[in-house]
Amino acid sequence: MKYAKRVGQVVAAGASVALLATACGGGNDDAGSKSTADSGTTGAKGGTVTVYHVNDVEHLDPARNFVTDSGMIGKLITRTLVDYRYDAKAKKIVLENDLAASYEASPDFKTWTFKLKDGLKYEDGSPIVAADIKYGAERSFAADMAEGAPYAHQYLDCPGYKGPYVNNNNGGKGCTAIEVPDEKTVVFKLKEPVATFEGAASMKIWSPVPKAKDTHTAYDNHPVATGPYKIESYVRKKSLTLVRNTNWDAKTDPLRNALPDKFVFKFGDAEATVDQRLFADGAADKNSVSFAGVQPENIAKTNQPNVKDRVVTGTDVCRRYIAFNQQKPLLKNQKLREALYYGLDRTSYRDARGGERLAAVVDSIIPQDLNGYTKESFFNSPPEGDQAKAKAALAESGYKGEKLTLGTADSGLATKAAEAAQASWKAVGINIDIRKIPGDNYYSTQQQDASATDLITAGWCYDWATLATIVPPVFGPDLTAPNKAAQNNYARSNAGWDKMAELSKETDKPKMEQGYSDLYTEIMKTAPLVPTVQDLNVYVTGSNITDAVADPNTGGILDLTQIGLKKPTS
Image 1 (cartoon, rainbow, N blue to C red):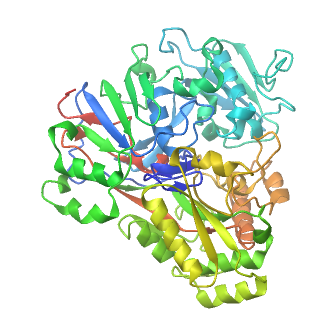
Image 2: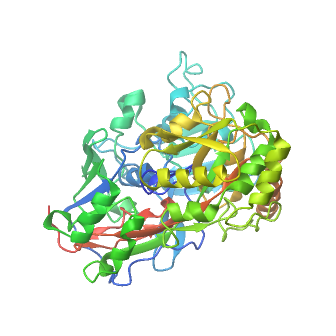
Image 3: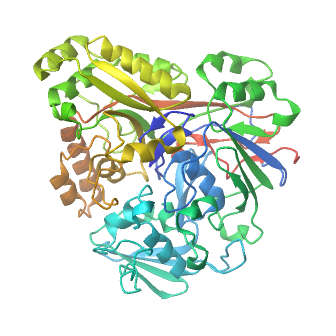
C-alpha cells in the first residue's frame, strides 16, 4: 500500500499521513500505543471532530484508494469484505469479517467464496448485493483506475478484460472470474493459488459499488457510503465533511465505533501552524486532531504540563526508501546505483525527518518483526553511509557529474529529507537537483514513466502481513496499467521476475515466505533502492478527544474509527 503520512512525505506505497501508499496488514504485533494518560474509557456518542491535513487526499473512490491517509478516511465511508482492526489493548492487528458473514477457500486455494451479511445497505437505503462487489472489482480493471490496489488484475483470470467502461464489456459478462450465484454470494476464481487471499479481501477494490450510481472518475468525489459516514460536502484542497449514514447498522460492523456525529477535514494548513493550535487547546480545537505528527521543531513542547497528557505515540508497518529509476539511462549502471546506496547518510536523513523521536534508520523495507526479515549484509553500509565505498563505486561507474533529479513531495519533512539526501550525495561527488511535486498527486506522477524522476522518494506498507505484499508489488511487473508500465515498482527493476512468478503459485505458506525473503536478498544485491527510515509517530490531540490510538496498520495514523469525544460538542 502506498504510504502518505506526515504531511509531505511520501513513502512509496506507504507514507505517514503524508503520502505513503497504504497497505493493510494483519496478524502482527507491531504496536501503536495510547498516551499513558488516556483512561481508555469509551467516549460519548455525538459531536464533531475536526481533522487537520496539509494535503487533500489523492482518492476516495475505492478502486483508486490505496494510500494511508485516504485509506483511513475510506474506513469511515467504505466497507470491504473483511478488514483489519487494531486492538490497542492486546497490541495486535486482527482480521475481522466486515461485509462478509463468512468465507471459505477450495483445497487448492484457487476458488474463494464469500457470503454477505444480512441487512447491509447503502446510504440511500438500497440493499448491498453480491453483484455490487463484482462490479466494484471490475472497475479496478479500467485504465483510469490503475492507481488502486493491483490484486484484481494479479489474481483473477480475466484475460483481455479492460473494465466496465469499454465497448461491449466482455459481451456484458464483465470479468467472468467473478461469479454471483445469488444476491448474498460472490465467488472469485483465481488464476493461481493464493493462500492468503482472505488478507487481499481487505483491499478497497473489493468494496461494493452500485452500477446505477457509478459516475466513473467523478465517483472519486462522492463514493456511495456503506460505512457509518457519508459525504455531506467536499471542496477539493479545502475541506471534506462527513455526517452520519443513517442506513449503516452498527450490529453488522465489528470494526467501527462511529462515536462522533460528524468529521470535518480541513486541508491546507501548515503542520507547524496546526501544532500551535493543538498545543494551545483553544475552544475551537478541543475537538481537533491532525493527520500530521508533531513537527520536529515542536517535539520538546510535548513535555509541557498542558500538553503531555494529550500526547499519543505509536509506530507503523511502513518503511520509507529512495528508488533508483532504471528506465533512466544513467541509472541502468549498477555501479552508479551502488554509489548512491553507499553514499546516502541515513542518519542525516533521519534527523531531517525529525530525529530519533520521529524516525528510526532501517536497513530493509521489510519490517523487523515480520517473518522473513533478515539484516542486510551484502552492502553492509552503516547508517551514516560509507563514503569511501561510494566514491570507489562512482569511479567504476564512469559517472561524469551529470545531474540526477530527486523527486519528493512538496511540503513538510519531505523536502528537508530530500535536502539531506542531496547533501550526502554531493559529499561523494553526485550532483542532485530536487523536484518538488504536489503531495496530493505525488504517486500518480511517479507512476507514469513519462513524468517519473530519476530518484524517487517513496515508501511501502504491506497490504497484509506477508512478504507476498511487499516483494512482488515493490519489485515486480505492474499488472494494472495498459502497457504493463511500472506502477509501484518505482525502481523499474526487472530483477527476480521469473522467481516471483514461481512463488506466486506456492501454497505452502512457510516455503513461500522463505522464498520471498531469499528473493528480496538477491534483488537488493542489484541496488534498486536504498531503505531509509521508519516513522515513529507523536501526535497531540485536543483535550476533549478520547480513545485516540495510532493505528500501525494504516501508516500509524490516528484511528478515526475508534476516536470519540469526552463530552459531545459541535
